[in-house]
Amino acid sequence: MAEKRVYEVVFIIDPDTPEGEATSLVENLQKIVTDQGGAVVRSETMGRRQLAYRIGHKTDGNYWLFEVEGTGAEIAELERRMRVSDAVLRYLTVRVDEDRQRAEKFKAKRARRAAKRPVKGGSRSTGGGAAAAFAPAAVEAEEEIA
Amino acid sequence: MQSDERGGGGDRQRGGGGGGGGRRYRRRKVCRFCLDKVDLIDFKDVKLLQSYVPERSKIMPRRISGACAPHQRMLAEAIKRARNIALLPYAAD
Image (cartoon, rainbow over all chains, first blue to last red; front, side):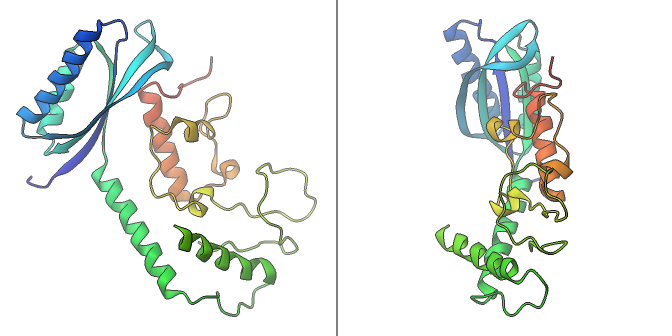
């Protein structure tokens, strides 16, 4: 499929691996992606943090985040390599382009609705008058700020 | 999403979360994520997710979290992902 997909890959590197080895591993992984025709759009550490539960007797881990653009083939290779590597304690790949698209749609929808709605919510006949009249006005005020 | 008042009487502002107390009027909970216009719940946002997993680290049910169905779904998914990469525990010890 020719369409471009966006993935977020989070992986945990064993904090006991030597510094140099860890950086070369990250570089290697990035290279794998580019070799397969993908692109690493974002590559950053989330820092060393405590694991919520022990993984292979380790209590800490260095978290890394990749944002990868590609077809999916490079993800397969990337995951294979991470599975094989002892330094990678755990990885998680999430496809994000579809969710982001959906979020965009919601945003657009909200903007449209805000534009359509006049200044006040109009006369509303249901009970709880004060609260009902107040709510829409508050929503609009927030949107102006944003 | 309109915040209809149910059961009459209560046109208070939304305040603290907890349920109990009130005699007759039941405050209709409003989805926090809708109010904040959150379209995407990120599984890396541990701080946010933690407020939805009480001590036993179970996912807070909708009747307590007050989230609407789509947002609760997003929330649950995010929590499960966070668990997978050890950002959140599966079970409290």
